[in-house]
Length: 85
Image (cartoon, rainbow, N blue to C red; front, side, top):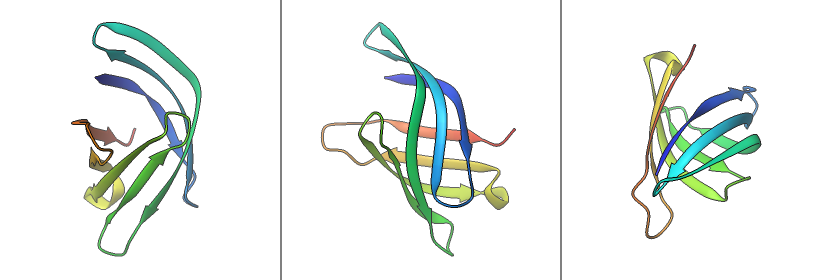
């Protein structure tokens, strides 16, 4: 699966966004996506996409300008790479 889109993080643990994804050649759009995140003092944390029901372990880099993550749901192998604009 591949995903591209825009997310806005509010600094208080929630985000909103819109995404287009390709899953085995099937294209779909999620125009109103919501989720929650938590980041610890060591810059590691979790991200949950409430709309899609998926979970990630994340790490922030470059003062929060970039995030990498791995989906933690059983049977998945999805990587996350997000950059601040």
